[in-house]
Amino acid sequence: MMEPRRILLFGGTFDPPHNGHMALLESACSAVRPDLAVVEPAGIPPHKKASATPAQHRLAMARCFESVWPRVLVDDTEIRRGGKSYTVDTLGALQARWPGAQLYLAIGSDMLLTFRIWRHWQEILQRAVLVVHSRRGGDEPSLREFARSLAAEGGRVVFAPGRVLEVSSTQLRQALEAGRTPDGLLPPMVARYITDHGLYRPSARPEDGEP
Ligand code: ATP
Image 1: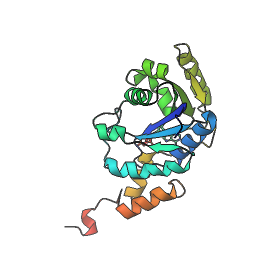
Image 2: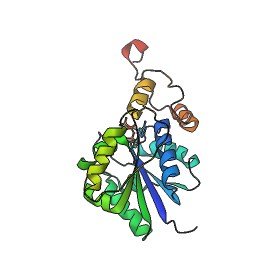
Image 3: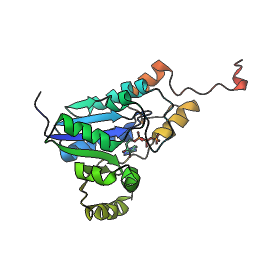
Image 4: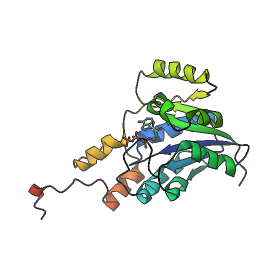
């Protein structure tokens, strides 16, 4: 395997992965054409409650991203490390493994706007170019303005145009737990996995006749 020179990191909770994630990864890869895209499901994401779905399921579902680009590595480093996952550490691990590679970090627009609360965000900017995909129609102007403020601090930001899908994992979990099947928002492999493993099942209520 040739040493990758351009590596794109795409981290997330992926509880579950959805077509918004697919759109982000697709447009980020088209924009920067990495030699390798590393998908990194979080152990415990720092700004969220501990994920309810066991890491092994999230890791298995994240394999849906393998179809997006010729070289995708679904990596389990953060999950094996356990504890909170910090992007700055994962970028450091990629640099140690592939010294000299240019790193890119794919993020949705919500993550760009909260970027300054990330642990060691200045160091992240030194290590990687941010590749941003819009999560909400019409948020372009505020994103560009924010990108300019980061550029003033040495940050490099690339915009990746593509399909904008206003969907979140939270919304999908809620729909599934309420017994609804979301249409067209889950990659088929993920929809199958959820059914096969009985994930996000409607919680049993007393009127269901459960003891
Ligand atoms: P949750 O609803 O559980 O908070 P989420 O849908 O926001 O989850 P994450 O796994 O936290 O998904 O997101 C991982 C990355 O994907 C983040 O950079 C996030 O901004 C991005 N992302 C999530 N949903 C979308 C979307 N619909 N369009 C573009 N990017 C997205």
